[in-house]
Length: 83
Image (cartoon, rainbow, N blue to C red; front, side, top):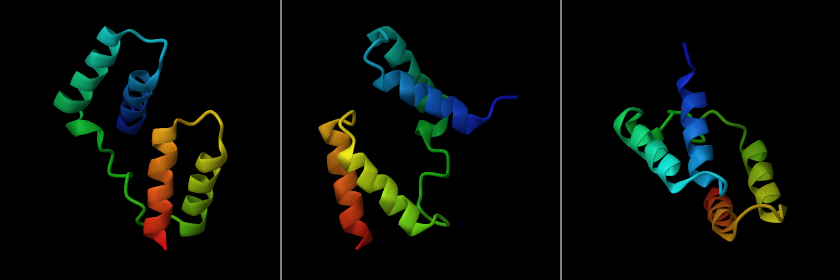
């Protein structure tokens, strides 16, 4: 039996992979929306997580040259919300 979180993660990775076809990405979007409840794992909240580890990960995102500007902006907003 597959771990739902891993399945969701795989579809999300496929959607963001520049090397996959648009047809494949659309299939992943459809699966997430129609079969996996929009892709929410229940682990997306920060409840129960060490806030220092979360902040460290967000700061690493800001400094990573391989991360998109959109992801960096999201990380910046989340860091500001933590203050």
